[in-house]
Image 1 (spheres, rainbow, N blue to C red):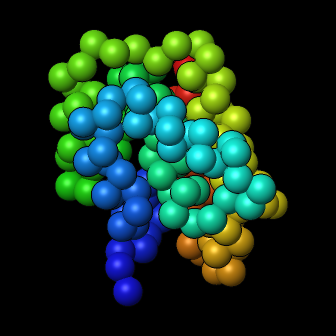
Image 2 (cartoon, rainbow, N blue to C red):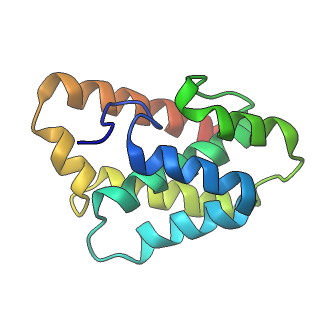
Length: 134
């Protein structure tokens, strides 16, 4: 079993995707968001990547985000780039993020199985949501 915890990058899919953004920039962000938006049902790997992509957009907007060792590559990229998310990309991040939180999402289903973990996961999502709105 791989890494699995409530932090944005505390699972293998999001941690691996974090390295993709350092090479693909906002194009990698948009691709991860599109995958969640285009799916009839958002599987856990795509959902985790979409949450991480929404976090990257939120970091570019707010200037802050998680600082764990799991997201060092993302933090370094955000600090070193001048790329700014466009208004349509921010809207896309918000839409994809809401899909991952919704009924047609494996991540939402998986986290709902454990009340304590579900609350912690939701708190992580609320933080992203607030940073997206700032």
